[in-house]
Length: 258
Image (cartoon, rainbow, N blue to C red):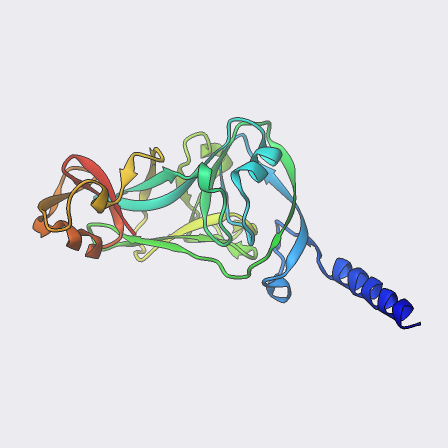
């Protein structure tokens, strides 16, 4: 009798767990995933993708292999690693990170080589409600923040990739209150009310490195921004990592400070 009760108890636990962990994410209004935080879930997500550059921020991890299964061949994934500014033009530096896959809550730009339409994502993974905006400061002191939309967000004043401009990943300012950013998309905000023109620079996975990979910590170096303007003279290499997070040039190599 004791054995029978044990079997029934285990079966009930399995059925309860199964019912609790099937989650369908709404990629328009969004889904509150707080109650599933840290749980292993069978997740279904239908996401509309345009041929070309899209933005994506997901509440779960996906490996390169997982993304291959959904997106097929030719896709690319990039993360914002720095910004530069000349006048009203801000250059957004994106670095290839396909091999790392998607990390939960991190905003990315995603190049999709297939036909425009809805793609179904089916993954068994852990969900997180925590999103991690990426913030960088330009030479002019303007803060540029790229964020993921966990829920549908008002668009006015933010910058996003319009379908019209997705061939070149151009972020355009939204000036209408009628426009929104749907869940799992990303947008950029700045610390200035001045309208800015944003252009994307695409960096290869190995095009940017850490300072310790090219010089010893005790070496003294000059530091330039990616546009060739000197931003620091005679800095110990070990202190380069204390600079404002961005992409710099040291000894002719691109160096990332996070």
